[in-house]
Image 1 (cartoon, rainbow, N blue to C red):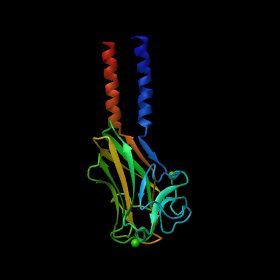
Image 2 (image 1 turned 135 degrees about the vertical axis):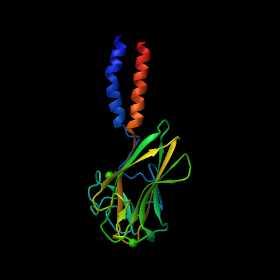
Image 3 (image 1 turned 180 degrees about the horizontal axis):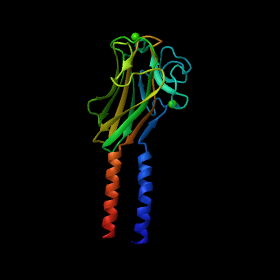
Image 4 (image 1 turned 180 degrees about the vertical axis):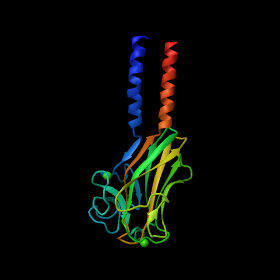
Length: 213
Ligand SMILES: [Ca+2]
Ligand SMILES: [Ca+2]
């Protein structure tokens, strides 16, 4: 084994570990990204220090356990000019096929009515939006996706996305009808799935093998 191959073999695990930790995207709302990192409809409104009638960044402790100080969300959103309200994110995903979406989600422990929700959907290269995760009102007046029931402490939610394209649009839509109905999300992330990394690793080893033969 030549010294160059030896160094490549030594570096491969570090490279793969690095890729495993590499997020394609992270949005934590610690600074205002309206119009640059995301687009809200209507444009984010309300005071970041108030939990009443808002759609945008919020720094209150009405929802607990966000990442950092700020999260994004809303309450009484049907009193705005739009219902549902939404926020969209545009990401470059060229070269990736198996992705994981994850985020922290929470909702104040209150009485939601039927027809109120927090939904996350996605679109690849301007195609139709498809549902990724949908928290809908159940018989107990909570918002749930059937597995995770939202409560005032942020909980981790993740989903796999298989994609083929160069642009991924993520859209979060919310419909609620009172100041007490606060929903929020934070630390939204897209990471490559382990399968993708495994293939990269196999591809890398194949390259080394060819170099050695
Ligand atoms: Ca945050
Ligand atoms: Ca309501």
